[in-house]
Image 1 (cartoon, rainbow, N blue to C red):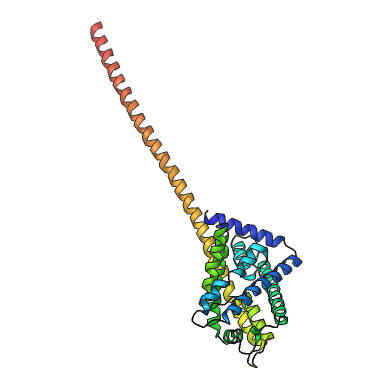
Image 2 (spheres, rainbow, N blue to C red):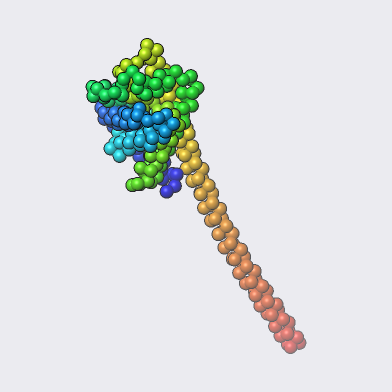
Length: 302
């Protein structure tokens, strides 16, 4: 499969997105927020019971359910939309303003779904939201990172997430699950920042027993910066890069095809020139023979 084939699949997704109603986008976004929320609850339930030196690896190995639910079940995830709509913008299939409006709607819908699943989980009355829980430690750390740390962790995270989505469009069956698992394992194990995952995580900590330093302003500080980082990598690190590679590959292939045609034509001309030279040489010999015959006849008549 060529890059252009995958670009075409992504552009079909752009058409599908534009064909959805406001209600469909909102509901799909709420589902995506909830699906990622399920994964966050799973990995922090596991992580809360593990020692710190193996916690990131096991949590990373368990997070694949998030994108599996989003892609296989079907829903509208903000971070994935940065890839699709970015490619749509670069191919003039959607205007920038419209794409940003859709992204804002999906982001808000993801937030609603994330908070909804966090609220449901709080009603389950589990130990995960107790004061000493790992979820509070992780959340407080996330809202105290500086601007550049959050930005670059957001870029690294969605680079991997969008690569997983990109590879899912280039493979089928088991290959999709492998692509999802490895990319999400990497971003969780390395501690990168995913805006939609943070929506559930920070909501869970807010609904649980938290300190006075953990404020709503701190939560949206994290979400705002991480969202910008996620958009940068979705638009440019995956969307623009592969769109560029597809176009350059196509141009090079066209050049090679044209060059091959020229070479074939030149070979034909060379062959034809060789044949022409042979014919001219034979004609010259015939003319010389005719001239000799005429001279002989002339002498005989004298």
